Image (cartoon, rainbow, N blue to C red; front, top):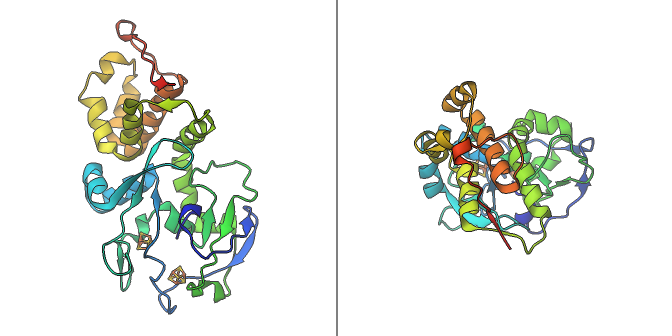
Length: 267
Ligand code: SF4
Ligand code: SF4
């Protein structure tokens, strides 16, 4: 259940969406739950929303209890991973003898397994040739089963296609930042905004609805109603706003008396 950053002793074999593999995981395999320990699970914005809602926590509480901060590979953007337990085998906090207690809302990385992805920053419709690989871990007996899959069937079966679709705008932001020359850095305030929108959706809601946000930006009534009641719409709105403040793109209009420009990139 790992992406390329967290593997040890694995022979990667590059796959495309059409590639075939055999795999089945079920409760009768001797290795059941052994994969849910000592792993690095990078969380995406939609992963956090699903998990914090399942656990009935605010996003702030979820971040404090279950995550660790890092910097996203090849960028200076903040990211988070699931914090493993402080036990002998560094278990995932959600694994029990009879399986995963958050299974319907498990993170993207867990859904992909036994496939790994070259990066969690995956864009739907992109050229996927060589993007996936087989996480051929020796302890995993699921590979000995006969059930066959194509990569695209597996993604759909595991619901990872929905996760990737909702995370598309986020992936786009990260890819753009990654393509920046390395001497162009974001100032701390921009990183904080990226973190808040990406992972702390409840705080972002507060920021939008309990600050002067609507005094500064010209947002239509229908959009306000949508983002007030739907977290996925709020996330999408936030990511579009980030694109506007980070890259000066998109349709966010400052109201005339609030049109004070601020530069957020430092050299
Ligand atoms: S078959 Fe693989 S994925 Fe399933 S429990 Fe065993 S190690 Fe984990
Ligand atoms: S979230 Fe669930 S599936 Fe993923 S590592 Fe933890 S227990 Fe295993």
